[in-house]
Image (cartoon, rainbow, N blue to C red; front, top):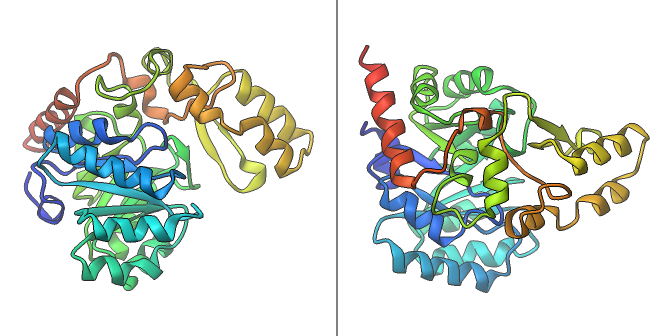
Length: 307
């Protein structure tokens, strides 16, 4: 399964781990890279020096390439962008904004730039700005989402750009990977599947909710504010949606969810925490190592694509 994505990333398999806030730290990133995929450190809203330390710690655990995800709405994004260059990070993925102002700096430093996009228009814009590839993420994914499903989005993005397309949203096994490749993608990115990985430093209660989830157990909050988020249903999501229906303003809604992702990931609060997870959670039945996940998915996808 060598292609433009593995060549660009310098990894064995075209499998990328999503840059999930509070989840995508150095241990998970190193484990995915050691498994032959590309691990990602999620910078999220962390202070710049914390991101630098995460990069150093990841290097202590793997000699293979890994990347950093930059959330562009982070007030510290400028500093994090520079740290990526200073530390010689191989790959950067971006979300929550347009990374155009950093692309020249990153490219001059030899950093592969891969924005996450939810539309063909953004994919074309990123290609023109100099991106090396794009992650086309469908609304089935966990966390912040767009409005188009993966099955519709991926082939349209593949038709719209010449750079490699990495598929995300609704992929958790070899069948999903094979389907993404049939739609024109050359790699996959997974988030929810890696939340339940053995190496993920995530509270066991959060992992258990994913493993026990059914196909109908995710919901979307924040539609009324223009910032939809997919997560597993719980007391917090029900209260949030009731507030939305009552016409609550943005600040009242934000107050309800402030710090809720950390509460879920770190404290295991599955009642009032935000359990970000994609619709694919219903396919995850057990906690596996990153090596088992990556190699199993690639093996099954290769078998299916040879039929």
